[in-house]
Image (cartoon, rainbow, N blue to C red):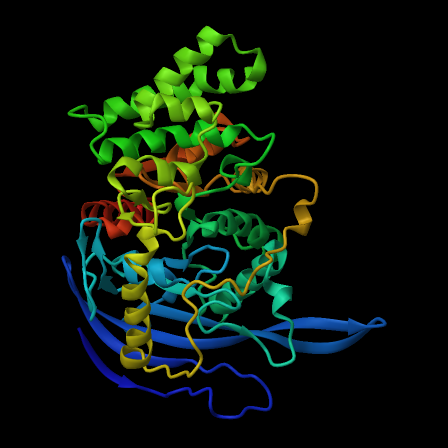
Length: 491
């Protein structure tokens, strides 16, 4: 990779009376299987402003936040139309996550070598060219929501205004509108790529961009998907997650050798059949379940999950994910990760029922933090003394006031967006070992979309032998990169 120059350097130590965009550009080349690709990188913060009125009088456009973005744009011949190439806007989730994971793990022109389960990489870490970057097919814009990355509310502003479903949605929608308008990309094919909570945000944006700006999307790329929080939240009275997590538990048990020589596909088929029919029925019966039926269910659940029959019996058939992480390998003195249960870790003792940390995050967090900080200041020429917030709790409590008295879901929003825009396509990517947003929950949610049968062909599902961050697993990274490239370039 080569870099020619930095046109400017922004430094937060420079006082500013009024917040202003501080974007800087650099130029680079990337070697891809199709040849050398020259591109321009743009990094910095753009100011979001809101129209304000007092007593019916327009008060102007008041700054509310400075949002950090990184864009990569393939160089074009002089006079060519910028609309010829697609534009993909990408973000992660949390809430409270920056876009570093998709940026340096899967989509961007540089990626970090973070290691994988059973093959950890020690510091110091390395960045390498990403020959499979989606930049070969689409220009890229990575967005860090307010209070993540270098994004902040303006001085005197209220960060809490952006720490919630609606405030976050409006802010990211405005970033997209500004970028598309300023870069003259209204006629470009437009895609959104989100991971985890970012999938919920992306689906909601599909509706918001249509309704607010008349901006219709070509596609959504949903990675480790949650569109309905009911499907993943374990709480009293909600039996659904117990069934939807079961196939992932089975996959984890298989990965750690608890199913012997059986094929993963056979294990998953058995778990899915149980999760679809008999298990939810047994849970719904509660105390009405006959003793013989209960014991048969105990046996089947233990066989599928690798847990002991005694443990399953003591849980009253309710296998909650946080407890599963501690229990499944307890006899080995190990815990498994939530985001990627291929990763294992240790606790101070073996008596607890919940992990004190996620081994799968601990294994890669340092690599991504180091790579991002080195890449932004060193390669992209953007200087800031702010800490880059990779994952932050500062966004909590996250407001869902729009959903008061009901579960958080954007399934209806996505369905409405697809009905209004029958050209909107959706790709869903799932990791079998993801115990945060399990693959079977994504299947369940997508199957419930209220769309006509003729729009079902607009949706494609892909599965990888990986966890939440599918790209940590190298074969999955390569496969998913190819799937995303094909999705963007499809007619």
